[in-house]
Length: 470
Image (cartoon, rainbow, N blue to C red; front, side, top):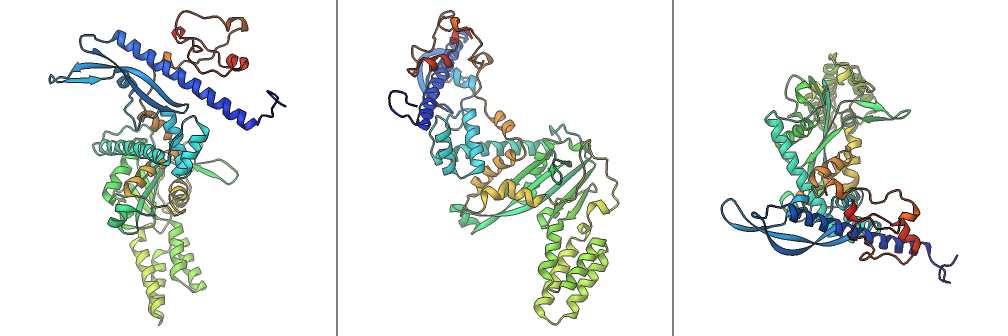
């Protein structure tokens, strides 16, 4: 099929239409902002705010850059000093990172969770009307991560002061913790050498069945940081207290690989530590070479006869003449002795556990390995990736929000760039064909300034009411 007697590529036509519609959307956005600014000018306190002319500003959106004018005012502060303000900026909360709109920010952040910043810049430039560099994408993620970090500190302070805001009431809470080693770069490498361990935690109240042999953790909370054990414990408690009513939690089951920073969190009679089964069994396979000895030790572990298990390992260490083999048995004995209280799974300890919530079940621990890869490792390890301490923590905060289903909610709290409801009403409306050419009321109708494609069908598709009628 030919349109002007030439063969037209469908991809080129699609891109052309997309670009023109984005330009039209940017023009609409500009008019909405300037109309709102005019309304603010009319209803302001004229004695407090003196009109000082217009100033231009650019807002980056998914439709492209929107350049608009807003009014600058002169006012007097409480201490008698003169200063200039923009009522439109204050009303919309346009003090964000590089003046990115909330929709564009979310697009960038979500893309950065899946791929590198260079790939993110290509995706955003191809799929929106906005062009952005990989450095720009990095800055957006860093700004969002830094603001999420401030929120985490505030939540930690509230939890420490016992003023948490969590509303979900559960009597049993599961926690699993582990670390992930990340390579560092720049000043961080000079300070911490080649790499450092990022601490990671997930908390949940159970699991639900989502397939024939698949289960999904419910009401999951995640947290990650390079901080010391004490600071990390305070941060993760803040994240838990932001979701759960911690006063109602009667029992906690804490799983981990036995690292000292994890064991330090097992404080209180309500906390029951369990050594992660994967790490427990791996230690046996790594330190014991003889298959028969492996089977005996594992059999004693599964039966719950921990004292007998430790005696057998000690006997193996004393009976061998091979120094390397003896050292391996001693290390295994030390590892199990230090985590003796966590060698038996929590289900077989005779604990009085509350009934699971409706539609959920309590399963064995061991979700940390899968979650640490899905949330952090898949994005932050491999591909020769290196990080600064600050940069890795900021991205990790975004990743933990995304994979616990809380990213949109978090970005809504951060983004205050919202128009009043009447400026965000649906533009298209159901009208008959004979009403399309009519102009309702007075005011800007869009076509006198908008760059509309020279096609009648395009004008019909993009017909909308004048803003003065909204």
